[in-house]
Image (cartoon, rainbow, N blue to C red; front, side, top):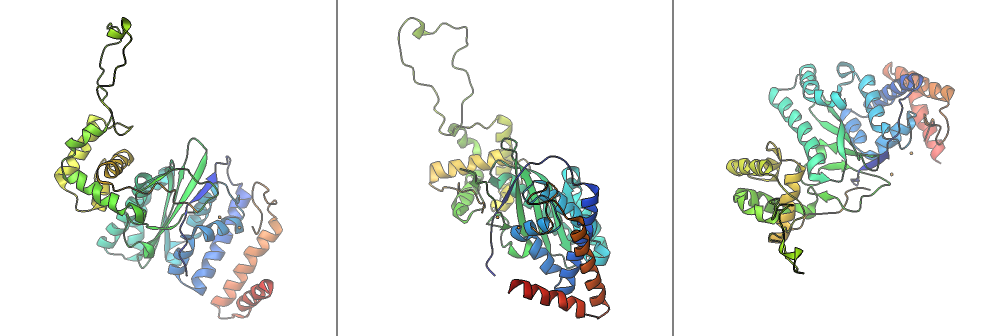
Length: 375
C-alpha cells in the first residue's frame, strides 16, 4: 500500500460537542474499534488512525464537524473514553492542553498494564517527547502544538496524533506518526500530513532534501559556535539619539557599520545554548535536537548558515497534502440524524456480540451488504 504523507489544516471553531452527541460518539467509536480489533488486530488499528484520511473519515462517521479543529481533540477524546486498555489492549495517552503534559505518566501506566519492560517504557516516552519537539522545531510552519495523543498497544507499537494552532490565521494543523514508518526520527518520519491550506514557505528540516543541511548544522555546532555571531544582527547602537551627527550639517550617505547577513538575531543567552551543545559534541542531528534549549530559533539559524556558508540548503516546501455519514454537529453537510446514528451503534453492537459468540452470520451479512452498496 502506498504511504500517503501530509498534514491536516483545520479552521478554528468555537464551542463544544453537545453531550447527547459526544455520548454517542464514544459508543460508536467503541463499536468501530472493537470491529477493527475483531477483524484485524491492534497494529491495524494504529495503522488506520495514523492515516490522516482515515482519521478524518472516522471523525465524520461519528458525527463531528467535517473540517473543524475540534475534529482532532474531540475524536481523540472519544477514543480515550471508548478504549479500555485492559479490555482492548490499547492505551490512548495524553490529549489537549494540560492532558498532553501527562503523556509520560500515561505511558508508564500503560507499561504496568501491558507488562512492558522499563527500557521499552523509556523508549516510548522518548518517542512521544521527540515527535512533539520535531513538529514544533524542525517543521516551522507557524503552528504551535497544543494537542498530543500518543496511542500504544500491548506489544509496544505506537502512533501519534498531534495538532498545532496558527494564531494569525486561526487554522489548526494535524500531524500523524506511526512507529512502523519511522526509520529515522529526523528524516520524513510522518505517516501523514493533509490539508486545503498550504503555507507559502515553511522550513522542513525533516525533508529528504534537508539531509545535507542537517549534517552541516551538526558540523557547525561541533566547530565552536562563536564564529557564527558575525552572521546575525548587531544590536549595539552606533550613536545615541541625542548626539549631533555630521549629516545634520552635511548631506552624507553613511553605510552601516555592521551588515547582518541573516535578518534575525540570537541573544547572548541563546548563544550560551549553542556553546553548551558544542561542549557535548552531538554525534548526529537527532542528538542535537534532543539537547536542552535547542528550540526553533537555533534550528532555523543553523539551517540558514548551512545554506549561506556551505551551500547546504534546507527544504522550504510546506510538507502538507483531504469524508460524511451521520452529518456534523454544525449542521454541515446536514444535521446529525439521531435515530440513524443510534441504529448504527446498535447494528455494530449486535454484530459484534454475535461474532463473539461465534454466530457470525450477522457480521458477515454486514460485509455482504457493504459489497452490494459498492456495486
